[in-house]
Length: 173
Figure (tube, rainbow, N blue to C red):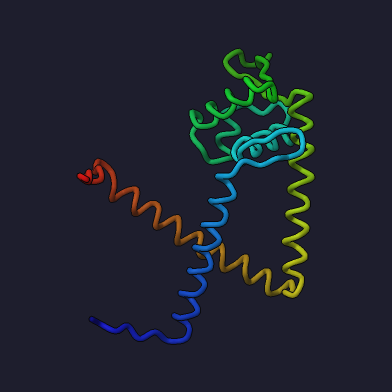
């Protein structure tokens, strides 16, 4: 077995990545849960769309997919659910017959408000929890995260290129 000798900086880097992995796990768990915003219980993806439609009344499904960096098909599936539940309505765009503008129904607005109140409590809690850090330290974190994201983009692109036309091997139980 080969021993890898790590200097202190490398150890700090590994600790940083471990903490980032834990953050991802927690965010994934949070996003997978249903949330009760007082007037309705819904998934994070649904509340995100309700929030965006509330912030940008008249937005189109194509615009939503671009904002969320999701496929139009993925957005359309969620929008269909939200329309069936009576939280979002769509109207044909007067300037472009092929587009539909999205708006919240009165019930959708109630969910939007409940979600905003919940989100503000979360932001306030996080903001206060970071109170011991200086503005300079927070800006350093932002710069570090941007650099990490640049690398993550490269990792995604490399993995995407390597996986073109390749399928995972099937496992036999």
